[in-house]
Length: 178
Image: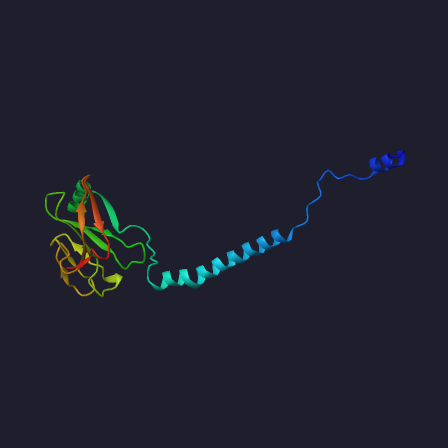
């Protein structure tokens, strides 16, 4: 039987509403250590084998943007070029590939040309200038004359899409020396 003193001691004893934590068993500690070790081994394998093999084999390729440029509506561009001359498409990524977009003829779907705005080896100061009176280009640095279609320069394929948009292909494999 319980004495009144034992009952009073039990009532007055501090009680915690939180259940007492169980102690860790050796099994749970071994599992935790093994999991961390396995994770470290996987990270090491990734850095030692996988990443170097990708970078050394040349399979990692950075590609920013598109290889094609939608210049706009063919009829609108053709009218603009007929009245003001070829459009200069400046290279916004460093200025090494400024390009002229040219249209010759009366059909808005054919006779489109895109070509480098400079002759090979010339600086940006030597960008070709359109001469409307003779319908050709002149190199301001040495006076060389270039035909209206950019013959002799690196050119880029130009197509008119089914929806009537002028598209220039800047893919390095598509460019050809004139």
